[in-house]
Length: 294
Ligand SMILES: [Zn+2]
Image 1 (cartoon, rainbow, N blue to C red):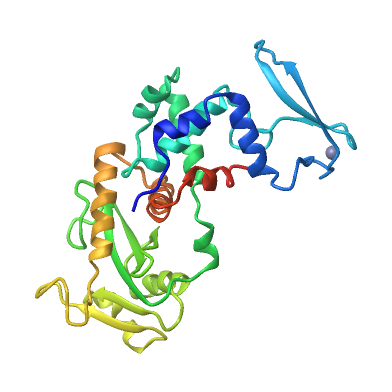
Image 2 (cartoon, rainbow, N blue to C red):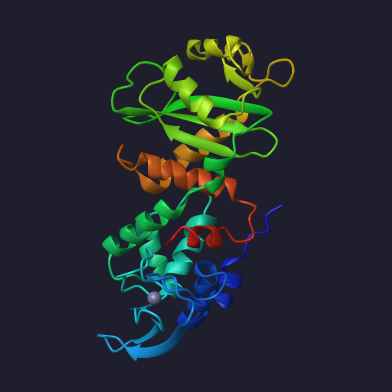
């Protein structure tokens, strides 16, 4: 069941700079204010007029005299956009199923330029990392599948792979957790590296009958494959339908929202997509993003 905050709830909570600052303080310094320079704990708060006449909320360290704000050293630093808009941008990016284009973001937030919107989305995307992915391997039944993104037509292996980037995904059946990665090619050794990085030994890997998965039969993993010429779900509930669904959602996002993603940015879009997918039932994915912003 979806329990995510609604836009209305979000904006009731984060409708002033003061409220956003107070919230970000608790995420940045959960044990109380700290000096980013000397880690001192004796901090005084004060307000001053910025260059543009805007009220600035500042801190001063009583130990080393360093003056800073809640955004110093974060992705929001040096931005003329208010935290209320940044927070709303993060909320919108996390809650739109297929992602949101910079153009749409510019409209929703009434931003002065497309460039600003693009820059914000880009910075937020970098912060959409899943710490889980670094710590814990997936286990039990895991589906693995690859596809091609980009070029004239995204699609399965086959002719005309020029200008297309192969991408591989693994999905843990019980939790629904997903990891995705752009890869150099779809050879057995490249796929083996990916699977070994993300799946715990002993996991039962479900694939189709692509030859690059044959090595799995004599590996530390259990391997079941489904012959897609014959059926989509083999005996024993062997299938890769979870991955198929991810590809279709991702491609609709790429086609409908982002139009064209250059190879350079594809890994970031994959991260964004996996993050959103893996946190779709979180009450506040925004807080997870905020905790990666500094
Ligand atoms: Zn200090």
